[in-house]
Length: 273
Image (cartoon, rainbow, N blue to C red; front, side):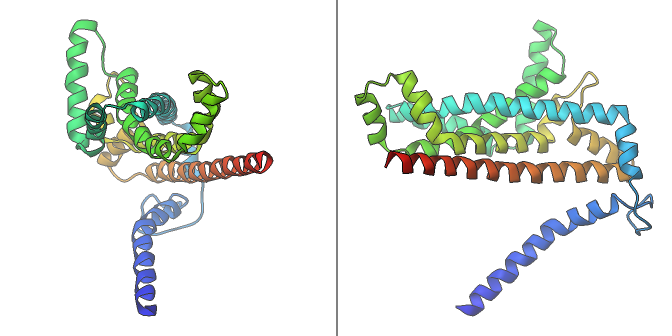
């Protein structure tokens, strides 16, 4: 049993090393004064200064953050209420059909999804004059983030105690009051988790964004890809480092918020008892 545990720890350690050593290597060389990754000279912030002085790159970063925040917020609201609607749906056939449709975007290839959005937006553009740009990227990000939120929120709805909902109804709570005062507070950790997961997926997406960007509008993943095709640039390392650190802080923030919510719920349960 000890050998199994030892080999298991070694496997996990090697897996983490394979995943994170390239990222660490990239981050270290973002502070190198050399113009390549063949050797490290001396510490410098020159690549970060160049990055922040590049107006186009700063605009792309702003576009990426704006799209990610808007897509995560809108998809969290729609996905949460969609999960609640599925929870209350009693027709098992319809529920299974809707869950299957929800999961299609989760398992479909990003290339297929991106091509589908491109065809749809191009067709709509013939009738409405809508071109590829901010609105098409935002709409596509919202579309593939909604199923993520539904998948995260729905299980916690099923973990709720039905007696608690019935007790609230017996005490005279209306359905809107039940939703705002009982259901939403109880599933808040999963809602927050869904928001951060949608935010991460939106920031990380490349394939779908590559199909639906246009008219001078771009997001960070597409821009980094275009820069990498022209040759190795240390600004790519700087951008990747900033993005990685931002995601790390986002994850830490999620766990911190989750801890605060659990602590507040524990206090409420203690007071009620």
